[in-house]
Each structure stands twice: as structure tokens, then as C-alpha cells.
Image (cartoon, rainbow, N blue to C red; front, side, top):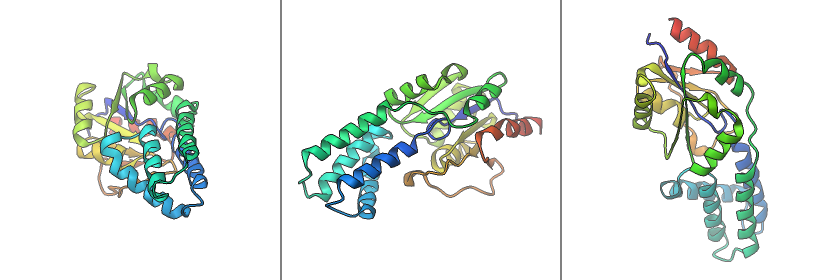
Length: 234
């Protein structure tokens, strides 16, 4: 078995909390529009808007806020009060200011692996927001490289692992998203390790490749060093 020389880490909901702030803002969004539609219908229309807008706005808070505003206009037939738009903009700004809260085992795991492997942070979303979160996390100096990408595809992973390592075959990616952090690196020839977070954005859901020899699931990030040790020792 090829030894792992490069490890890619997802950021949001792998190293620090993220999705719960989106859920809190969605709850506020539903309260603001409760007089116009029920929550279930509103969330379905918001998800549709997010899907439509990914190609234009990309991933992240700014695209999320624009999708909420678009949905608010749609469900009110263009009669959404300016005060609601203002509230949504304020909610987005609050999300962008929210302090970083590391997940359990994140710092210890990175510190344990940094001396022996090349570590690459691979995240998608708004450039400024992701840079802010990494700076606040205190983890930046332990990474050999940081890649903030518009999407995570097999080609993107193959290129990253070629630039920052010995190719995808000698690389492992770990994260909470099956769609973005597990399937594409496996298709690129590497390992895909899933660390479920418990909250999952509908757009990031995908079937697990349960029979693939380079797929693993961990209960928490603290189990990663042992997995790497097993792969490297095989």
C-alpha cells in the first residue's frame, strides 16, 4: 500500500463550527417570513435558490444571503418589506463576524501529523471569509499550504496533490462532506475519509462508497493519526 505523504483537511465543520450558524440564520429567516409562507415551503424554495445560484455566487455566506433575499422576494410576490431585507443583510454580516470555535480534536490532530506529513487545508467558499476564519483559528502555521477553491472536483484534488505532494495516490483527504471531501479525492486516486458532523447541508449529501478500499469513516478527527499510522505501516 502506498504510504501517505500528503493530508488534505476540509475546514468548515471539520476543523471548526460552521453549519450551525447557517441553521440559526435560517430559523431567523423563517420567523421573518412566517406571515407569508410555512417553514417547510420556505426552506424548499431557499434550497432551490441556492442550487440555482451556486454557479454565480459560489459557496459561502454571501451567496447564502443573496439566495435568502431572492427567496424573500419570490414568496412575497415582490412585496417583501425593506426591514426584512435589512434584517437579512444584518444576519449575514453577523455570520461573517462570528468568532471561530474549533471542533474537538482538531488542533491536537493537526499538531500530531504536521511533523511527519505535508498538510494542506482545502476549503471552498468566499476567499476573504475563509482567510479570516483560518487566521482566527490559530492553525494556519501548521499547514504547508492553503487552497481556497470554487468547488471540489477530482481534477481539483489531482492538481492540488500534484502541486503539494507526490500525487493523489499518496494523498488522503478528510472532511465532513461526502460529496466534496470524500468522493472526489477517491475518484482522483487518493483516500477519502469521512468524519460526520451531524448537521449536513442538503447540497453536500451523497451516497457513501462503502465498498471502496480507500474509503473510511471516523467517529471523530482524533482517530485520524491511528488511521494514517495503519496505512503507512501496511
